[in-house]
Length: 379
Image 1 (tube, rainbow, N blue to C red):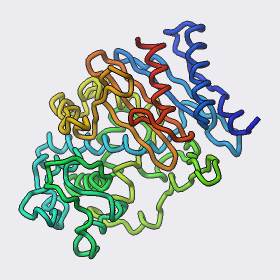
Image 2 (cartoon, rainbow, N blue to C red; image 1 turned 180 degrees about the vertical axis):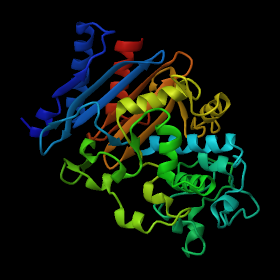
Image 3 (cartoon, rainbow, N blue to C red; image 1 turned 90 degrees about the vertical axis):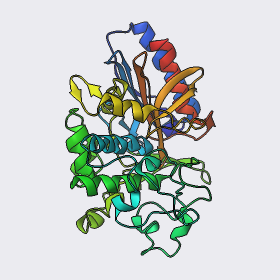
Image 4 (tube, helix red, strand yellow; image 1 turned 45 degrees about the vertical axis):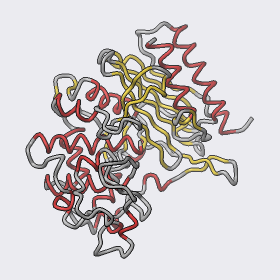
């Protein structure tokens, strides 16, 4: 038996007393079968209902080479779900009247951000957060040099052919610019702002800076290599970037922390953060953003794509069930955070590696596990 497949069905479980042993066993057996079909290395899940964590569970491996089991306190780089932390931070600064969603990004970032085909059209912060800025990632997004006319002679290639505000294009650069704006407006380094204003108030361990976290808890991430047909470890997912941080320039170097995808957090702590959004900005008596701000984030701006301000709306993850949240994928990791703000339930599912394959825009293992959790614990 393949070593990876053998270990991927090991279970470390935290079982909620709200469910019978037989119900739990049925659920776990089903998820094991999904993992085997999709060749998943490990999966962590958390389910919230009516504000309570009703189920947490970790399957498979944290690290294949050592055979270390995945546990609920393991942390992952969650990829694009990170964008919602950046948007939440922006909403706090809007509430504090330090900026407006309709501010000109050029004035906020310190250099000109204009689509050369539409030079008179202002690109706003709202456009960045909703992926309607007309920006793209063709020049890269790990440095602001990509879009800075003074640094990149090909800066014009960062822009699409349509007018800002008239079309949707998912773009990571949007949120690395957003993170930089948070830093410039707040005066705090981006990773520290998120820690002080979101994570600490929610009593959540996590963050963007590798060296400020317990790296022993990081789950190794594995990416499928199409040439070798193997899942291979990706240490770059947790690159501490110490040299770059040592030479950090406030208000410009921010993409080092990847506001667009660099949050490291466990599934259970991500579920607590999700619950805050489910309850319109409030969690267990602690308000992170106003109810109005939370509703604005969840409101669809791009109807066809279902995207708001770093929160999307979909009825395709669970067919016919409307949920709000975000997905993530990077280095072979896949993540999902989705909730029903009316019925007050939600799911977090994270895998640190699987064979890729999509249905209705969602990676198969994530979609299948979410539907399994919904069928056994919610429906």
